[in-house]
Image (cartoon, rainbow, N blue to C red; front, top):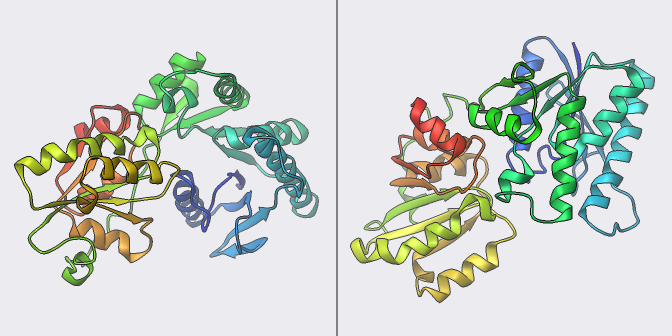
Length: 327
């Protein structure tokens, strides 16, 4: 099949988990003999077109004019994605299926589906109601309604856990048979031959200190604020411990201030975003991995930690709990 992927993030642009999923999925589909084209947002110095080991990646700018808000920014991006997809279709012919990833590309997906009568598949990676424990303002309601529209327009909807399937049925009233559960996965050979690198580990903790590792975006629903709040109690029981926080996000300064206010800034290390081989190294350096999410559709980080043979502590929430139960 000729498959068109629509996504607002694709490497090197990484905002959340969508980027990794689309990247790996595109390669798997390519290996299975399909023709895969990705249309995404151009961030930084990434090229406008890239043949990424057989996956054709087209990146588009947003408008030069500044939008009033994030919703307008997304709408402008969708217009440009439609224009690029039209250009590709004029040159190479229609696609057999459009695969849209989350509400951020919903309007481009809907327009292209209707214009070319192309089947639409949508993957819902998370919901606005889930991220915010409900809908509390008009912006959140707009996003929630756009999610509903995308699932309504799609012929098939993909989610990554039974937890998410139940959530979409509850929120949007989707038919049970329309929702397909396809769990996320990781390469089982990712940690083959990787041993603890003590020189690397000493960048984050002393040899006598145990490392508690958190990996994820620094946003409210990932629950890192609760782990930091628990650190004084942990330190009372075990002084030689260091919390290493791997990730980036809008809460960084707030979390640093929280650690300072608790007097534990020397016990919380904000390491930033890990990439490449450093991901394997930090998991191997850790003594335990903790993911205290308040909302988690799946949780690839839990799979990675288990593959690295870390003890794993998760909150009793959604996809994370489902992963641990299946283990």
